Length: 392
Ligand SMILES: [Zn+2]
Ligand SMILES: [Zn+2]
Image 1 (cartoon, rainbow, N blue to C red):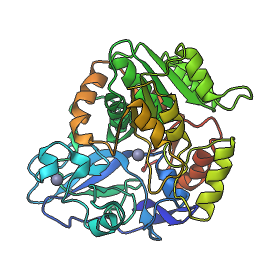
Image 2 (image 1 turned 180 degrees about the vertical axis):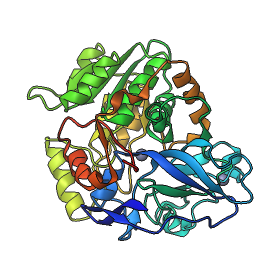
Image 3 (image 1 turned 90 degrees about the horizontal axis):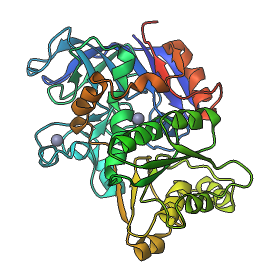
Image 4 (image 1 turned 90 degrees about the vertical axis):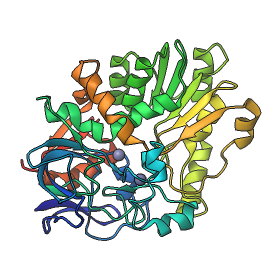
């Protein structure tokens, strides 16, 4: 089959590789009908996530048709149409029982690599390094899906792929970000980063009752999408714009009730701290550039909530923990507990409360993927979301 492979930092190639096969009795093989490139794939492209190996198949947002199931798979059969969550959960461990699916104890065979860095390991993820399980990703024609009784969500209606594909990651991730932000009716919510997760965080914040959402980015096409959802926008790249001042001005000096960092570890800043982070990450004295996290902690009102859906990988410097303590804020974060959100959000799509396909800007083939990684990284061609048809 054809697959998009990581061949080294900034080196992505479309290759012909062996088809996946059933390994465990609880596996399913999915023939992929649509897949996508995620913002967090750029952290692999840019070499920020360790334990990638040459030839690893990329991608964790995919859906398709069940091709084959292992003998223990009872919830799915050949021909079923499914969306697959990017986190892999066993459904049986202590954490799955608590519905902390992303903390599953049984699905990362390389947990020891995570434990060395984090103390404990989370669940395995598709296409996201060997430290996260070494599972082949979904930017391919087929994928092996372990624990197939637990993860894949059946799509029984005839909704087109593009309307349901994002249940695999970014819609639930944006929704959990808004839920973690503890929004009360009428609240003001600030969202940094108007990429796909930021877009769904904005939409979800309104669904959860936010009175006003302030969206912060620098790319006109993303800011326009945020405005189309009803957000007020702040373009931080404008010369006289200071984000903290802008947020104070918009909130009568009080600060937003909730701040959502949908940017994560590769934050950009033209200010002095941006230069500082660039130098420190270059010499490995810091692994992440927490520009947005710093701003969110400083901007949040006293007693407010900072929610972090953006991926962070390791060690952060100059995070104003004194401000966090001094203001008595709450911080909520973490990988998305996908399995809890997919079905309720599918219902919202079925009821026409949201059409997630509005963010798609590019529809491509597997062969076009290597070039599109670069376009996506550099935010050229007004790119907002790339969807791949593996059979085109
Ligand atoms: Zn993702
Ligand atoms: Zn589990």
